[in-house]
Length: 221
Length: 359
Ligand SMILES: Nc1ncnc2c1ncn2[C@@H]1O[C@H](COP(=O)(O)OP(=O)(O)OP(=O)(O)O)[C@@H](O)[C@H]1O
Ligand SMILES: [Mg+2]
Image (cartoon, rainbow over the protein chains, first blue to last red):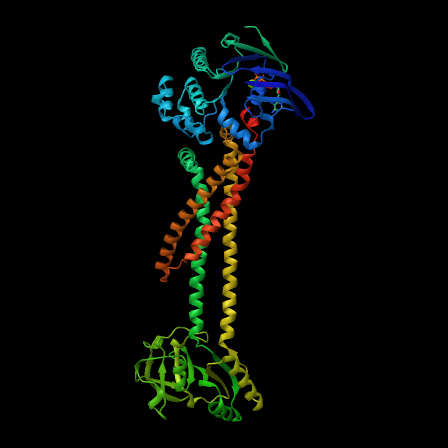
């Protein structure tokens, strides 16, 4: 169970204050598939970064199973990211000099619940990447890269999978595939938070949040 | 271990830049090795020269007209600490339009310099005859039993010396040696060998003062000391110059690492998002520089050995590269590498994930 209580975040840029998040209250149950929509610049990514332990808020509480993540030390935060969170980004962020396989195994170095070799292989097979595992990222298409990123995010068996516009750089068909994949993962019990521009996917999850100018409210699907 | 594997894969893609960094380190290593080798060669050559002058030799310019000097020498022989001595006089003479050095010496002179006869004989058995012995380099000019005219007097060549190394006082290989009894100038040199130079010097000064003889004393060991100091100074200066090459390579490596950190910031971001701690990022980059230093060191050592082998073959000298020097250079490489790597690695590990990932 993930709870945000009165979370606010300001960015100060050259004396100008941008309120990226204003008093956000959210409660995500285990196994939820949360879709977050909102205009550009409304604060969706900021929210996701806070959920992922990459950013700390100015005020409020972030409780994961009752423990306040904001009180963690830098080291504990790293552990939290390594063992609890999976990230998928719009720009993939694959390490360019590592092969697909090496990229996928990257989280295993930092985390402690380790996925088995056999599991990696079956992921690769299911996502039709088994022929590409020795290739370098620049030899893959966008859709393939994003599938690699998703497998990578799954390596530490995350409690919470955070996807920041995972289909932003993909064509509709590849996007569809990725979304189906997320759906399948959710059905197997994983909690997913998906940020998207594309309103077509707003009914993909079981809950929908709208972010507007730093304020978050839950909507009916 | 994982870090090494990543580094290997990184190098497979971006190896050239990396290799150039190693090379700059390697060149610094080669510089140091060559400096060590060259100063060894120079030092050896010069010190060999100095030691050939005979250890603990004293020399003075003395006036012998009043006979005091002879009394003095008698006293020295009786009570002094001097092992051997020889009066030496010098002049030049002309022969077939060439000028030759002439040295009037006593038999003991050859002992002082450990000069051996090559062919013929030394003066010992020729009490009153006018004879000369010539240095090795004159063997083709004068032959045994040739006759030389000097001051209207014919001298017979009775011996040709073996080669001796050039000494500090001139090249004895090109000298013609005449028995001292034919010397008729008023100023003479006295060469002495003693076991205790400082004592002998004091002792001689005391006597010479007593006899009111004007003199100058040159101690070989003083010259040797001065030379050694000079050589050590030269070596130090060379090493400092070598260190400059290390500093240059340090700047180069630091520069490349900074660039690399900048280029790989999305990698740093994603690693952090996946749970890498600051420390593990720091270690990853620092290790990279350290491996770079070690590879540079190994390349440098291989190059150095090749260079020194080539030089020692060319200069016909010994191969010289000490183990302590190699270890010292390894430490130096690691030290310089770490210094160059710390700042970039620190910058890398302190990069803010959100900043890096939202470019
Ligand atoms: N590191 C930062 N420094 C300063 N301001 C920032 C920073 N990150 C975000 N902001 C500001 O916070 C606000 C919210 O940004 P955020 O990235 O969360 O928007 P978003 O909803 O993800 O937009 P998009 O859909 O375009 O990705 C923006 O006005 C942005 O300018
Ligand atoms: Mg965004």
